[in-house]
Length: 330
Image 1 (cartoon, one colour):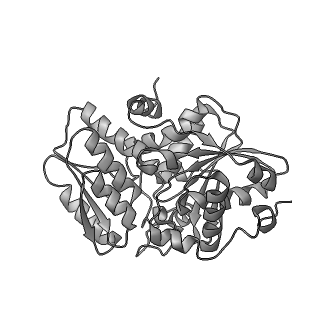
Image 2: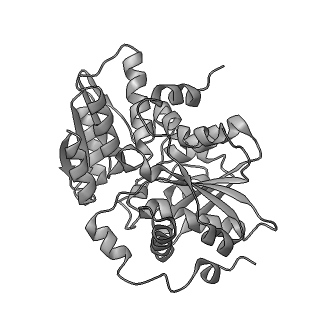
């Protein structure tokens, strides 16, 4: 039987990139493990979000319900992904964004042809989107809480595992949980032995608290974290059951996120945004529990940063202390 992720991979084959795996031999030596990075920062729109948005829209079209307009609510990467996906099929798009969104992500969303409407905060944006979705012919593509979005995001890991299943663990960041849910589904289709680990900012740990308490927790306001892709107010009822099955969770402090953003940009020589880089805090936390060398897959979720974020990241040099010294594992 063809799984939802296999079907998504078939839909996306001629629309998105099969992104490469990259690694740093220097980082491998420092941490005593082989770490392969799935470079979704080199994906269409610069983030894995292109997969979920495009799969969701194609699935809608295949069902015979061609939208007259596509809408979305997003703080950045999903906004660009929906605008880009809608343009592939010549469908008008309207994106609702909080006014504190990264300027480069707002500008890029407009560049893909979408109308951008700002709200004061994330809660207002969500309300505006919900009201707009009630109009006839409008299709709302959620950033994570939709089965076709989850399946699309899962193709990022599935296309790796089709060729190579020799991984001890897969790591991905958590905002609303769509990517992590897709990663879990993809891994379970190949092996029960590959651990799937989520990483979230300590300042935005609603997913971690939801799993810990057994009930979805919602933040009252957008969290103050440089990892803008993880500023969601809550996970979704469709991602939550998958997140409950993860093998481990780690939280990243803001200083750790800044540190790893500098180091991954330095070592990998490609643009890595903070939400993607913070996953390394989970990697070192997990490796501390291991007794032998491991082979890991890390999903680099995106590479979109504006000048303000870049300046904040590089305000102080953090390359003077190597990861091996800052996070001794043994």
